[in-house]
Length: 188
Image (cartoon, rainbow, N blue to C red; front, top):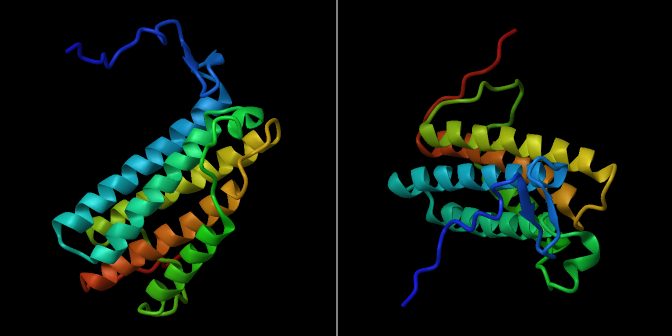
């Protein structure tokens, strides 16, 4: 049986293929954008690993795996020109998923003290990882907005990413809460 090769050599000259087969520069804004989505997904995976290793909140861990799948959905749409998305039957982000995330934010937040001051990122390792995820998510959001000036974005992508950054912030606070770690307030 012949092994599948990990390398194709197709990108050796600085180009890559989109879902449609079109070749584009690896330096194109589209490639940067879905690369940032992939980076966010990888860091969420790292945060999931921390939750799993410490056996912290299995339901949250399971939901984060679902979020990772939705990020793959977003990445696949960003890797395809809008006019080909229907042809390739790419999965889309639904408004229902955003509502579900809002409900989960509200659920986790109901366990936390209301914020009266900004908090410094940190605390537990899980919390710190979620703060890193949140900042990467905000970068993805800024890139989406820039990309939107030249290309049509996948439906609900900005809303999903905006809500995800809120969710990751709450995950950071909730992780500290679960491990009984005090949050440090910003004192200007």
